[in-house]
Amino acid sequence: MPDLNLGALALSSPAFAHGEPIPARFTSAGENTSPPLQWEDVPEGTAELVLIVHDPDAPLTHGFTHAAVHGIDPQTKGVEEGALLDGAGQHLVLDRNEMGAPGYTGPAPPPGHGRHHYFFHLYAVDEHIDADAPLTRQELLDRIDSHILEQARLVATFETPAES
Image (tube, rainbow, N blue to C red):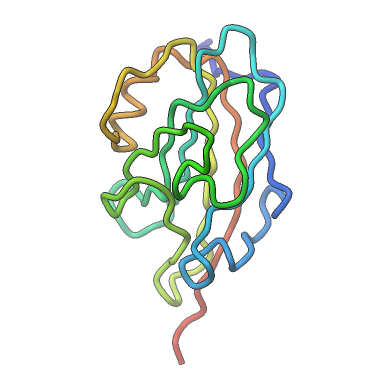
């Protein structure tokens, strides 16, 4: 049986519950700021944490990456609201979102496309990622693939109503 990287690592947000809608202020229709996130039970041997926010329901071949971040200190307990926009003093390496820019861009599914699911993936990895330039989601996943100790995820939803 393959190693599924399951363990005690847990990811949550004080702004929304798992499986529930993300508040509008964290979307492109709102303030377009990143939500606060918190985690616990980071496994021993973690060199850094990696966070990817991804919408697999987007009508693109590989979905839509809303944020990719590496270099998160495993001693931290989370990121504050807005931290994925500029690092907010937490020394995060902001990688490229689907728009090609570093940092976070909020949910904005096409009107009438239905409810989208936003996966916040947190990875505990056993090796530092050696990259000064921002990476794409795929480049980041390729670098961490064989170094994941544990992973956790939090899912939010959002839907843009059909235009009348």
